[in-house]
Length: 116
Image (cartoon, rainbow, N blue to C red):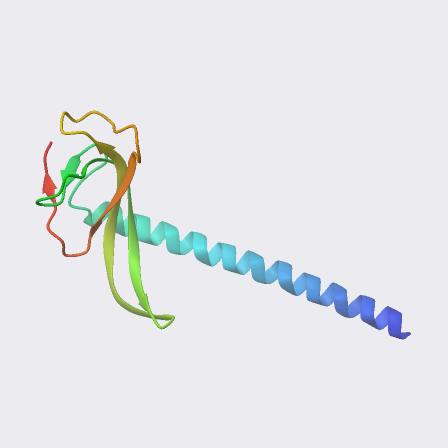
């Protein structure tokens, strides 16, 4: 085998390795997302379509999506899970805001009030 042939074989091996690692990482991330979403659906206090706010806040939000997050410290899996509500910010008359219309609220022990 020549130097060029060996370099070509090594490059092919590296390319195959990268492809396999990308597939493994994608599969891992997909499984994590599905598990977190299932947990969020089972444990969320509010549902899609609910209108919520933090106490003493001017931010009123209609929930469009519910997901879960996991606290991660120092690249180790520590801490608990919590629900995140994503949605559209509303005016006091409950109409969608035109400026900065998207918002998220974290159900990680903070008080959240359901308006409707």
